Amino acid sequence: MSIKKNKLRNRFKKPVSAAFEKINSSIEFDKFLFNEDIEASIAHASMLGSQRIISVSDSNKIISGLKKIKSEIKNNKFKFDNQLEDIHMNIEYRLSEIIGDVAGKLHTARSRNDQVITDLKLWMKKDNVLISKKIKKLKNSLVKSANKNIEILLPGLTHFQSAQPISAGHYFMAYYEMFSRDTTRFGDSLKRLDENPLGVGALAGTNFSINRNKTTKTLGFKKPTRNSLDTVSDRDFVIDFLSSASLLSMHLSRIAEEVALYSSDLINLFKIGDQLMSSSSIMPQKRNPDGAELIRAKASIAIGNLSSMLNLMKSLPLTYSKDLQEDKILVTSTSETLHICLDCMIEIIDTLEINKKSAEKIISKTYINATELADWLVIKLNYTFRDAHSLTGKIVNFAEKKKLFLKDITLRDYKSFDQNIDKSLYDFLSIKKSVNNKQSYGGTAISQIKKMIAIARKEIKNEKY
Ligand code: ARG
Image (cartoon, rainbow, N blue to C red; front, top):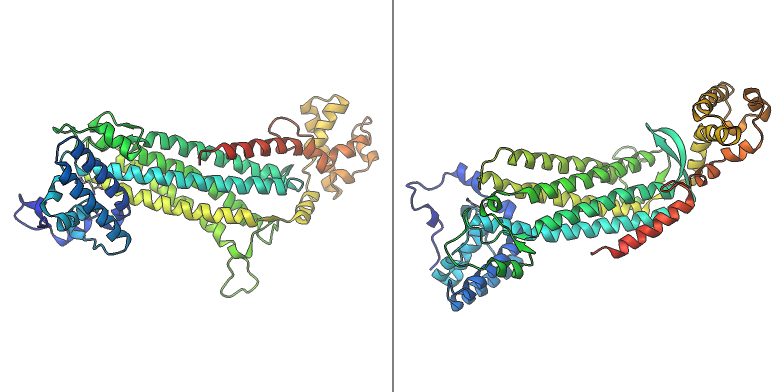
């Protein structure tokens, strides 16, 4: 005999209203937890059996019923019902249809409050690993691009103005660093996720002699949580995830923005593969970087979800309140978005080509080597840097007026600024020299970048996933 659908409502005189059913039901956004719900229920039922809280034969009946439900859901043969509120009640109800009254024993010594966090944590642990794997793939693509393009020189920018020349390898490795920090952040979140909430009950613990260490082991958690009140009301792990995800999305949006800008025909520095471009419904010449633009845009979803979750938790009294049900909408929304963005960014980087000619042309029309001139005055003529900066400013002004660039100024004209300037300056002004002279640790000299690439490759190889 199956339990009645409204079994939990015996104290009420009226059935739920349509409006209340709609706001209260979460099945549409928590059914994704079915696998974890069944996994946790099996661990719970088996522990109840081995602790003799229920008989081993009842425990076995429950477990085989749960396994049947799992295959029904996987094969799309399961009917989800709004009236049953959430994934937990949907599964419990179906279990009662399959194995009868024994199903009613599954909820001994647990509450949906510990059940839902157990499910969510189990799911998030897996998702955390999937995301970390994708970050690793992206880092791999960046290192490959850095290596491939190491000899191409790009205008390095500050304030989006040409500043100093850099190697394209250095550029890609900058993003490698950002995403490496994301790896560590997700790794840290995973450690904090690794505590088993199952067994804290509704809020106070339980009268039954359960074994939390056993379910902890079965479910692959590191240890059980320590305070039942904190456990049922804690969603720090959700905020942790949404925050790591926001940072990662922000990084993705930065590189996406640059890809979109640099592949514009106005700049023409980057070209991404046709498979990642859209055209226009009216302008046949268009190559629009929609993928990059959408990655740029989707960061706002992750950031918004983080803000929503912080707002949801703010001022919430201990312990469980239904507010907490909304967390799953935010987690899945951010996770889905993140997976799409990572997949697309990996393809963008894998197909990205740099237009070397264009880079050279852009650089040649700037005063990007002005700092070299100032440094030369310091090194060769013993200027203080401030005096060198000031004289270089004057020389740049002069060049601008004469429509010249620094390498085109004659030695005679240079000497009019300082008699001691000699022709060794020209070599120092070369863009390639400028890059390769940046030998300081972490600088853009090719030899430095090669070292960093070697370190990165080792780091990637040693990553856990
Ligand atoms: N669907 C609920 C949620 O996601 C499960 C917990 C229900 N607990 C309760 N006390 N009503 O939060």
